[in-house]
Image: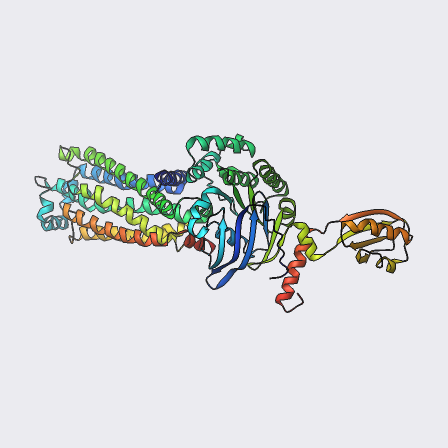
Length: 275
Length: 329
């Protein structure tokens, strides 16, 4: 395994992604909306006079009553408004954070694998002396690393926004909650890997970047499932749930990678290009 | 196989040897019983229509596909076992330039240089040389996507040449280029071949290009060989003798008697003052000229004629087509 070759493949793909405005814009706009604009708006509303009554809704009260001890321990000592904010932005919003690694890894992988075929550059790449494994790893890393990095940067922005906007309500730095650490450093990379594995498999079946990207968009259903699960009180992203969820997603990503590696060989790729 | 003629020179080193090669895409037999060799330093052409199997042959030679039968040796390596080593030592120009259009010319060369195992200094030095040689230095830091087709093809050629390969595969090197750019690319190929003395295998359906560039040709159709040899070898397949175009000062009436001159194989009469005579060989020309003079013909001009490759190619393809349809081989 030649790591210099792997690095240059990843470098080339990242450089190409940086030049692709549609991918780049989504990588800037989506985190800004999810991690900055939406929480900022909610915090502004919460800070507005009279909002405390609005948050004292019977449904929200019922949600507080259903909170398991593992979660309520994290929120101990908070008043009702603080609890509402913490539940909304600290828990219900958490699955939204997972959209980012999934979406970015899928879009970069689609650009890297299907896009290369669409732009008819694949054959020249296959004529190099890089092995199939080096090509695969280089391309997978090009999708994985930036999506994890952008997720982590978004997390930093989220910390700043939540603490800056929440300070008048809390009077102290209340975020991140302990459940976010496994989410950010364990589940989020797993989702990025899942996005790469799924998109590589999908890219084998479709001819265009958009086709691969749209098909891999179906993975967002997992995130929506988590969102609905939390909103209905079925599941809460506690530290343990995060660790278990991360394990399951890593396992799924591993299976997808295994399948993707099987079909990532010169012969199969050239046949796919020819048809 | 129809009229395959192989002219071998045992003293020359063979860079490529292909013997009874077969390849299938699913149920479709893309290559069938193909045999040829390429000698060191020559420009060898695979000539045939689209779908003849030229690109598939190049892919097989580079170990991109596994052959379903036969044997291949490229620079001493078996592509099925050591494809990586062949791809490391050979340069390939694919049918499309296959450049990363969002990368600059220099970045494209750097990318392929690293993948070929070159160190940074080598890449920088060689890139400068090639960009200069291919007249791209002034656009070295511009994105390849902003280049004209001819410039892209020149950059793709420099990428193929980057590693100083011993062997170069060029798949339709002037396809899609305007005539001026095509001439420029052909000149570059001839020039670099002469300077660097490398072996070149060209896939083309452009007969003019094949005639200008190739030392030897393999004419293909539907995955098999129709004929192989130098242009003069192939001309002899179609017409065993040599044609002379003769222009006479005054009308000549004794045309039938020309056939009786020793060394004359065939006669084609355009008019009483313009005839074409097929003679056995170059050595027979003085004898034929004496015979014409003896018959009283006043020769104004006599020009030995090369049969154009186009005529050879079309006749071979046509004969093969008739053969497939039950015609006379």
